[in-house]
Length: 279
View 1 (cartoon, one colour):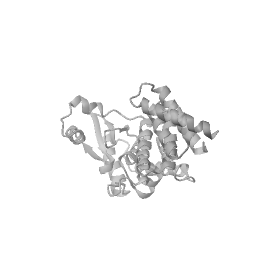
View 2: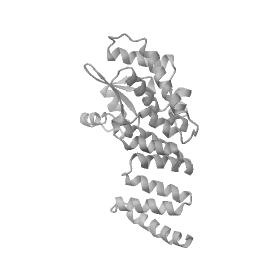
View 3: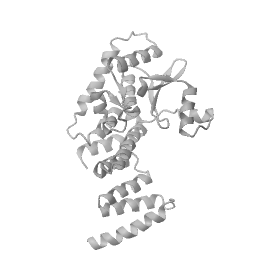
View 4: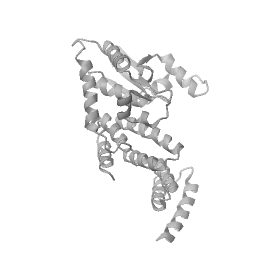
């Protein structure tokens, strides 16, 4: 385990409220950027927030603070959603988002949350299906915002339409939409970032990068059985047969009645025979 991987594992092993979200996101990026100066990027977030906070009146309302934050990030600083090249892995690395000022919903949300919290907003990420959002507590309720579209405020009808488009036009119940607006924990945000990268790397058959990402996923959710199975498949593609066998066995131990247990047991038998010949 590299020092950065160990640092990440230690970070996510503690209580969620003690996890530094930006640091976790930068540690994910450090797999790709081995000499990444994490402290410098954390300081940049501090500087951005301090620059904005100096302009805010002491008695400014949360609603006006949101407007100021939107102007600062999207008009002055120029942060934007990268719709033209959405699946570029750089969109998932916080250092690249801060440098290039473009990203995907979740990384722009991390920037929004980190700066918002530093200027006194009660702001959280929201793991909305298909498109990560942000919510902010106001004096008279909660506002849902989309950092990918310049911090646009979304009505309940807007959210319903997004759900409808994902479910073939079926009208979602109000309670269903409301249940999708819970605040995401720091671990959930980091995990969603990692799973985005997992999807990109496996799609391109970039198995070494996929493996590094899977190691971070397992560190984040060590009880998620399916991740051991998926990492086992990546090891198999890399012809790391003993490691694949170990992960498949771990999967079956955690989920012995899984739907694909028969197929995985067949792989275990093949790999056990193969590795015994390699000894």
